[in-house]
Length: 410
Image (cartoon, rainbow, N blue to C red):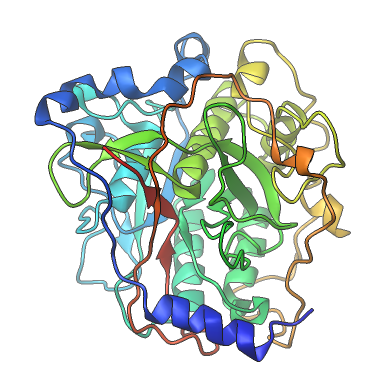
């Protein structure tokens, strides 16, 4: 059904009242030297074994976010020049918020200087900065420019840990840019959103056809309560109790959100693509879907976990997965199409007429659990929604970005 006036109003009020919220304590500075020991998910994913096969070498990952701070020791030598698509006078290698830097480090950090060890430490990061602090800003135009720039810089993987709510017809330029990127061979992954325990409104660009919407699961394999669900969720990844650099203080803080899950999914794609450089975006995605851990009951795709939780080790260590046809998109197949619109270009955008929002299917409760390498979940802290865009206007394409993240205790 179409977004009702009341839903639009609630979405507007949620964004208009959003402020940057900081929760939890601050880890002692000494803990910064022990961050690798706190990165439990690397051990759960068998990263050390996977790195003997692939470290993401030769793969570029665009991080469309708040910029990337290249002074972080783990990111030195890992970040390309990039671009600020919102302000040509600013550098994409600056990050006043810290969100983009953490995402980049989770993907390709080297662990140097006690910093974050990324899952794909030999991949390169292309920072693409978009303004998230603007009070009135065209998200559609910004995302479109960012995606097209990333494609022009020959990035194989595009990570978007930003989201915005609204109706699907608010994003005609972004939809065209996504189709263009898919046609050019890029793989786009975006956080499904962190509003699953609240309004659960669809998040964009994750809900745009062809984008891999990534949800978050915790360390025992349960879908995180904040992870937004919908028929656009393609895969899920570990995204709760993830250590990152605190953004409002010095030290290491625990965090959770579909931002982090998307970063881990993007890094996993980089590992697989580096091992199989002749594969296309469709083939990399297909094996990720095939080898994902599936729910024990219920139909697939599930609105909670999509096709399951990513397991790159099944491809890299066990040799599983059939890449299949190079030019057939396995995600679009469930939506009645197998290839992006070949006519998508900078001069043509899809119609901005009314469109339906994703309709949740009647999944069983058991669909909300997937199989991840089990570890005891000792994080019982509360989490808070973090958004940027106070006073944003939800009219047409003038909507606000939200950083798809949550922060727990340090």
